Image (cartoon, rainbow, N blue to C red; front, top):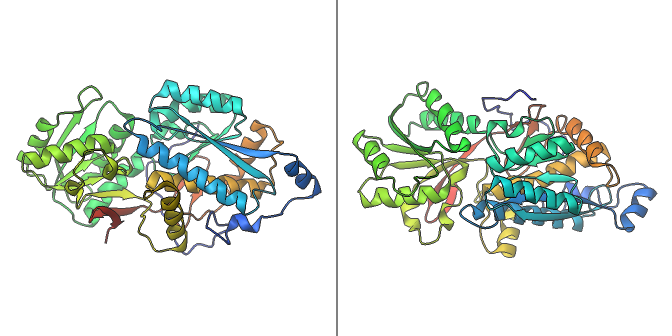
Length: 401
């Protein structure tokens, strides 16, 4: 079992990079084109490939997350193959739908295992990832979840993540609100039946007293009562909350914004990564999300070459702007690539041997990607990277000033 972190570790942007994760054209993948000895070339020619599986909700209320992950893995794999593969070998990917259901996520894992999966990028959400990690642990398969943020998701030593943990998101959100003096009175609406939401709320509430604002109302709902938020909103309004913190998923958040508008309550709304996707909710008046802020390591309007190319290619292929979940998954593919190259791994290695190789390698690399200029890991499985904030402006996510 691993020691779990409770704070966000910041890494200086000026640190020297050992490698780079991604890029279109002349990137890290291109550097390895044609690499490997004669045996590797012969094996690659005979059809040996690295196989990466993904699991997430491709249908249902959280489909914006799962599809972004699946699409971005597909995009990254295509880039890598076009640039020569990994250590001279091509890469295959396959995604499975878990419908945001832990039991179905385990079933999806078994389907991918039968397919020959060697590494898992997933599961996309926390409860599903927790369930699947029992299987990857038993099989000693390397699991890199792009977005499962519950603290215990990386409890086993074969599981790492790209996103921030729930405690880190709660801590960083409170610090951002406090340091930017966004409000003196804050209300919270959270899902007490969900480990993701309640975990973020707990550390947010603990840090609030250190940040110069007061939590004047904290109201919960559960999976069985997530359509009518009038009581929670009225308490926030009566308490004079200028900002409403929503550590929840975008489907419920869209209902809250709609109901707040109906009752004439217009605080600043602030969310975390689960909020990413609110502009895609069917029949939701997206103008109600104008000014909404969320903490995220990815901003689609960033002007660096890597982000510009990723967003351009994603839009061309899938017809929409990618979200944070997609960016985390895209980075995950290149993290695995970098680890495999550092270790000189080949597809004929056993799943367990590949896992041991990647476990020892990931704690030594410095990676650069869409979600951070510098990412490092230690044996805890937690990433060290710097968060950003975005705001919805004119119907799009833009970097907050």
